Image 1 (tube, helix red, strand yellow):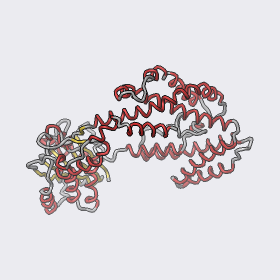
Image 2 (spheres, helix red, strand yellow; image 1 turned 135 degrees about the vertical axis):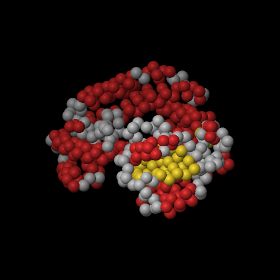
Image 3 (tube, rainbow, N blue to C red; image 1 turned 60 degrees about the vertical axis):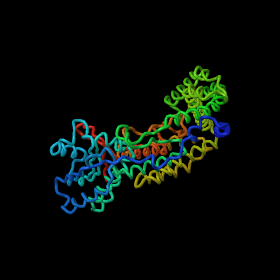
Length: 468
């Protein structure tokens, strides 16, 4: 039903030509000429190789190759750096070397404007690109910029192949060539055409205003916000009243649960959610006068309240489903018990697939136990709880090992009663489903930056480094 309502709302807006989608349809097609990038007139080149890793032929080649790069403004000097032996964080080697040998290229808190540093540390092996703040800002070479990460990645293949000059040239060319930056911006603009994103042109004003400016992004976000508010309003208009009528019955059932599958934390989660819903009344009243003919401005003003109401209604709906699952297992619903056994078995199978050695063997043993449990037997609850306890121990071991590998600060959180990943057994002896652990691990790995900047001195120079 939710999907039907969402589709209906979207269709109504499209057929009616609503302004929610007007911005995207009015954005002009990108023109290549609008994305030309100003070039730097004269760029000096310095090769810094304190341990003589490069031979004279390498350095001569590097200087010749640089002539092929059409540097984008405001690059004034390209500095190649090569360290045979470097600190664990190569940025510390960069800072130390520059302060001792080229103090004019580094300030107290940042690299000198106009400077671009491209280099590699060979032990431990790390590629890096750093820049003056003006260069980093205009060429998207600040930490967390995708262009910085891509440029650093360009360095690695050549270095891996033993061809340091080729690797450093590839990184510098990708990072700072005006034509390549222009082409990348134009390609991005074409890709974003359907989303209504436009970019400002480039030219004489680029140095003052920065190379890239996203024109229309604010209007696009506003249009999306209004469209979402209209969709969510239709859902809340129906769901809020239905949920309010069911709330007391859900509360009674939640407090009737008595088995060891339910703990104080779970009850507290439900009570907090129940109270959040009860406190929605005044907020819902604020947009009760809305209708399909209401203006975009009215929907924009009510968007935050509508979004909150939808979220809470969804969470109550999920919590109700999970409370019903717990109730069914407690009250000897054989089909429900079989289903929950199946969910736990799926988790164990996934854990076995992702593990080796003793962990995989224990997962196999627990899978066998799950297949032996009779959902209709009087001792079902005792055996199910025993299985959950053993699974909690196993999954805890897996999570501890993963934390060592992904260096996450916190362990995976157990699913709440109002989350779709919850199933009966969560919280018993600290049980966290393996799928929740797997999602936590994936998120931890993804959030670990491939490119980082960790100057131990507290120096805040722009750019970053990446091990390989």
